[in-house]
Image 1 (cartoon, one colour):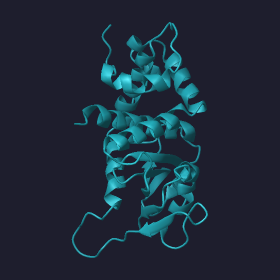
Image 2 (spheres, helix red, strand yellow; image 1 turned 120 degrees about the vertical axis):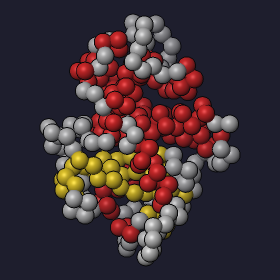
Image 3 (cartoon, rainbow, N blue to C red; image 1 turned 45 degrees about the vertical axis):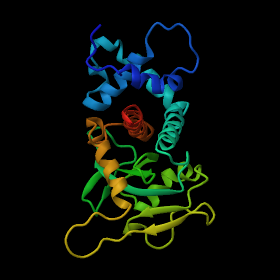
Image 4 (tube, rainbow, N blue to C red; image 1 turned 60 degrees about the vertical axis):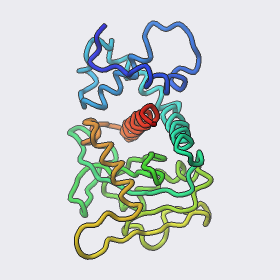
Length: 252
C-alpha cells in the first residue's frame, strides 16, 4: 500500500523497541501508526482528516493518548538523546543546559491554559524548552502565555532535575535574580545578556533558539492546536524525537 508518509526502515529501527517492547502479532502495524502521528505533526491536518491509508483515525489517536499516559515519549527522548550524545563522544547525560520560552498563538476552540503575553503581544500558550549545548531537547513544558518566564519554566523543573549531572543552565535576561529552580543549590543559572549595537549571535543562547526554529518546521507546532496541554507537550516531544532520530541515522 502507498502511504502519504511512512517512516523509513532505519528510522523505525531506532524507535521500534520503545513503541513495541513486546513482540506479538498485531492487526495493525505500529510503524504505520507512528507514521500517521508524524504525518499529523508534519502536515498540521486534523485527526479526522488523516488519509484513509493509515486506517481509522480513532485508532491512531488511541495509541497517541496511550503513549502520553504511560510517558513513553519522555522515556524514549531521554534514551535517544543519551545515545546521540554518546555517538558524538560526549557523556550520556549533560552537565550544562540551555533554557528558554516561546509564546505561540492558540487555535480557535483551545481554551485550557491560555493567556496573553504582553511582552510578545501574543495570546496563547508558552512553551518552555531545555536543551543541551548541542541543541538536543532534554525537557519540554506548556503553560499559559500570560505566565512570566520564571513561572512557566517550572513545568520543566522535574524533567531537568532528573538529569543529576546538570550544574549550569544558560538563559536570557528574563531569568535575572532568583533562579526558578536550582535543585537545592546544585544548579547555577548563568544569564547571557544582549549587547548594544548590531545583531550578534549570543553564546550558548543561540542553541535553544535554533531548536525552537527546528520545531516550528512542523506545521502542527506553528500554532497550538491541542485542546489539552499534555497533548501539546506530546507533539513537541514527538517532533524532538524525530529530529534526534534523523541525527542518529545521518551521523558520519
